[in-house]
Length: 151
Image 1: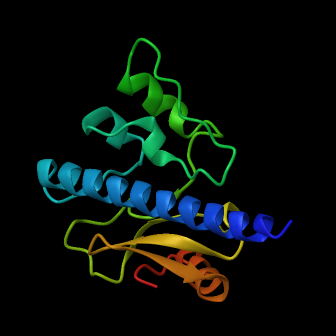
Image 2: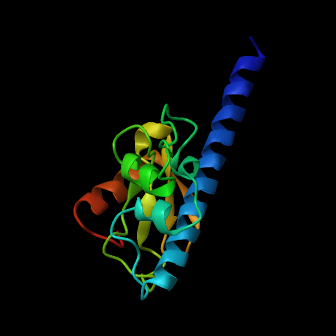
């Protein structure tokens, strides 16, 4: 019973880092997309599956019960249409109207507080991903829902 709390802390850290890595991959794909589309980020996150070399697994947080979007025979097109159908996307896309010239403090994507409970990962305009504690994450999400980006 002594090892259970230590194991849970380690699992939490691994899941949090996996989320950060997936958000970084999404950010890199967004930048590639923007470079090919006049500096515009995609208006929908699922376009990344169709136009960039990114897998459905990259849109998941292992702390959730979400599963990869099914690929099917149409490969990326089928996965793209399934991505937002529920249970296949662990992140919230916030860059629909932004360009790659967005300020470093703009939020491109983030994970809901329900993924980890103690805070959330955020993908920023300069491409870095940060863990924000619950109080700060709640504040950022509230501002984003009020259309304030950068918050």
